[in-house]
Amino acid sequence: MPTYVAPPGWPAPVRPPDAPDWERTAQNWLLDICPPEYRSYPALRRHPVVLARFAVLHVEASQAAARRGLSESRSALRDVAQLDVVEAAVQTWLAEEARLSGVRRAVGLVEEALRGRRFVARL
Image 1 (cartoon, rainbow, N blue to C red):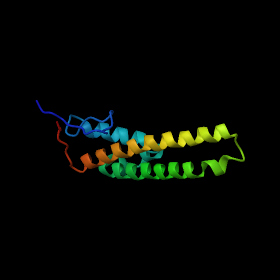
Image 2 (image 1 turned 135 degrees about the vertical axis):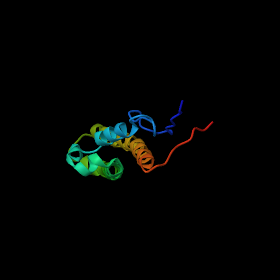
Image 3 (image 1 turned 90 degrees about the vertical axis):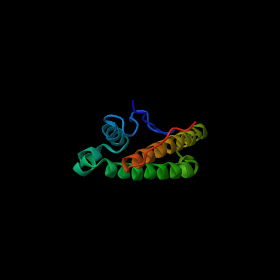
Image 4 (image 1 turned 180 degrees about the vertical axis):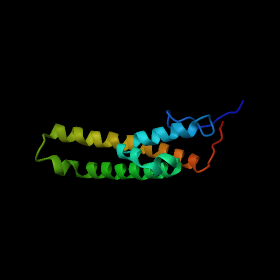
């Protein structure tokens, strides 16, 4: 029986590379993390590796937005919100930055696998 290997950081909804139907699960997951409009583009639906590249760029843009939000939050919000609300916004940006870091790793791994990379189990 074949053993399918997914590396640390691999997204849970995606089956490991070469497992039955793994590319369909990868495509579905990639579409879920991208803007809904991406579902309407035939090229992205027919070519998972192209979709993966779009997803990487989308996540990286979201990371840049989170970094900007974090860097500007105190100055941009101090005149419109109380200090505790501003601090809650800062904590939210920090949490989002951490979440996006994990998503970026996962989408990168899926892209690599769609391009042919395979992973091996390590002891």
